[in-house]
Image (cartoon, rainbow, N blue to C red; front, side, top):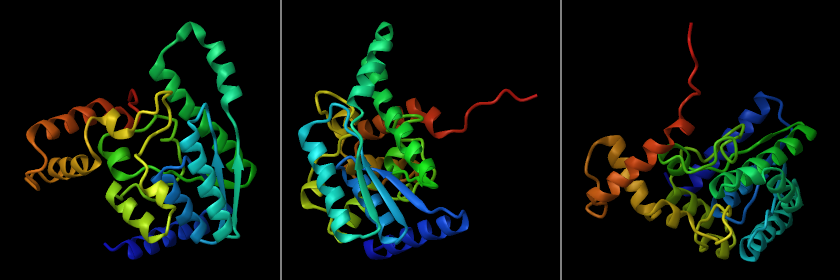
Length: 251
């Protein structure tokens, strides 16, 4: 599907959902990355009141500046957008202090995402709105590359059926700032600024191909070798608990 048609379909879908459920406000956390930039722009295009929120927690200057730049770009181009900056660093410091006995780098990284989710829901409920997710198909439904009850805690998922390459295509069509399109994707949860591909151990292009090969059980490209397919399956298996329903003890 061409990016224009994809954009029209998603914007219409968001509008229909909001109308059906009497939603007055769309709330999106923006990080300066391509996914949140595209989703927030799709929300703005609906004409529905859209609140974008930058939530730095010891954020790198580069990613935070991209988030602010996108927020300003949205406000300049869409009159229905309000952009807020909520510095969660002091709150997170208190959280770290209170949980010092349970020091764990990964746990604290995930806690950043969960703190942001809490912030977004506070804003959404105060405005009669919903939290709009920014995860794409590869991350949310392929390898489970998100924080459970963090950035995975949303009300709707507009790009959840879009590959990462689809998101980049839409970003270019929407005239998202070039520095955002060209920036290496990162979740912004680590002090060393590690990228998504460094964490995953393979490029998004290989992840997409491996995902399609695994789903369709056919060889798509020689560019994805057996090791990449194996790695995709290992990552997916480790994160299936995020993508499947919560286990319930039945009687």
